[in-house]
Length: 294
Image (tube, rainbow, N blue to C red; front, side, top):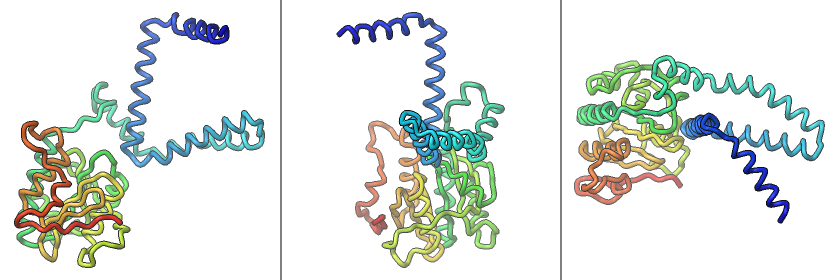
């Protein structure tokens, strides 16, 4: 009991001298740590962060167990790892510094999406896909969400422009140099065209699905992106989310789906929300052909 009271007294002695500056200091550090964690979750850096955490735990265990040789080697790995991390996270660091230079301090640590840009992208995409479907022109668009697709953007031609139906029809014109790749949209703006996507590893997909559909499903398997596809053979419109493919969509259904997936908070509260899962129910005039991961 005496030990507990002594511990409480020591803790109180540590807390009592804290002033307003200390509280502000703690709040700022907590906010920065939170934003770093959110950045790791949004990118493909989660595995790297887990590896660093395991390395730190191994160093602590080797130090407590007095494994001097192991501790020395792990410590050297950690020292050189700092340089490796700078090289590994160079794109993220550069993006952060660019954001510091272009934005106000309040926008540096906040992820702000322009809802109007996204809504315009949806409208223009539906308009373009309606025309492309009639002419049986193949198309593949990836709407990025939380998971960043920088690696895929690097495989194509980087762009930074608004989504426009006429531009999309020119990009996917079968004689255009970028028509074979995917268009990647981030926060309502086109960030890349002619981009290569990973193919799906699902062996149970229908054999009548071409490379465009398999790439779209693969992109939705490896990220939380929403992928819209137009078949070059049939002109049918499809959407892949979470490794599942919904085929033969009407333009109105495509628009409702994109709004629900990309603008979930924009739906009116009194109206029932249109959910992607509802698409798998048989609707009049639409096919319920769904490909799922095994």
